[in-house]
Image 1: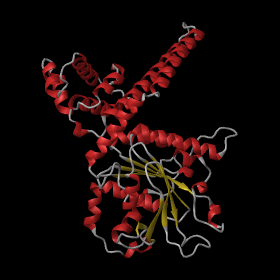
Image 2 (image 1 turned 180 degrees about the horizontal axis):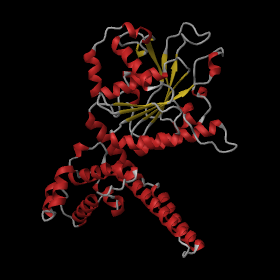
Image 3 (image 1 turned 45 degrees about the vertical axis):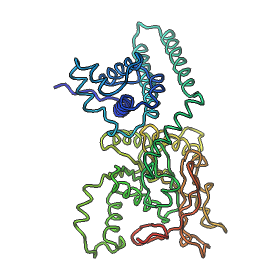
Image 4 (image 1 turned 135 degrees about the vertical axis):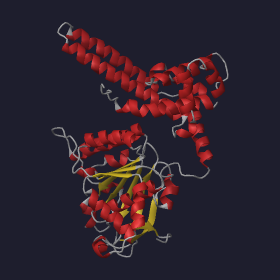
Length: 431
């Protein structure tokens, strides 16, 4: 049997988005005009998805009622498409709203066009019978056309923006107090931010031994226990070392006392049902990490990506490029990754060593090591403050400093730290 050719990652991810858009388009009245005006046949890579889109668009443009019964009646002579509709056109299967899905499909379509153009150019360049200059000129004309289309797509009328904002408010109201994103394990942080939301880049920074890995692991486990699949890229610690920390939490003792601990084996067996995966490739290349994240988004339906930590990633460096610029390019790439995968990315980072020795050692955003661009790219920036471990800092309580929050307030969240078990909780909590 001939092996099926693997589709590009953006096509794989687009399948779910295509179906979410179609489900919302057919079953909801709101924002259909916007979707019909923005979408084209090229936005749908799947054969049945594209065929169903054409049926829905035709019904709408004819002025008919666009609903599931009407669509089913229109395609009653096409059993395979009718079965497809019955199987996948259910909005509750998807988490992508119509407005957001439309723009994602437009971006995927542009990616496919660029890929197709690059393949065509490669074929023609390799063909001795083709004129190289003419080929390059043709390609440049098509690139110019795509750039113009992309530039136009970024311009949005005020009415369209207001419609999109209203849709977001309606969606928030429908959640009735539920978090917009993935819970962090810290209630105040959840209230201030709405949780870790799809497309956001979160940065969690601290000095060594201040607990950034412990807190990230805690946040990841909490998310996984709530049913959100998590992928933890650990460039510093092995999977076994991270697992020791998890066992420490379960046993209620420090890692150094695990040998003498009494085990709750039932609790350990329950870990089988928690969707948490660890990639402990040491000093992983940034490009490789992003490629694996794409694959895991499809394979395990990852909803949260955690990276420990930025300064350990192997990042290509151009001649004469500063370390700060290099890391800045990395954070921009990871921000794009969060948006393309439609998941939050929690990126750990080091704080500058100098803050341990200055008179006022309380961290600020400027202390993010090697890069001032990290704070620009981050949607949320969290700084761990451990005065009990800092030189000359007395009389202060450990805190998580919300130094940046695009969607809400910032400030200090006082923490209680169980250093032995590496667990952190808010002062108001009992843990």
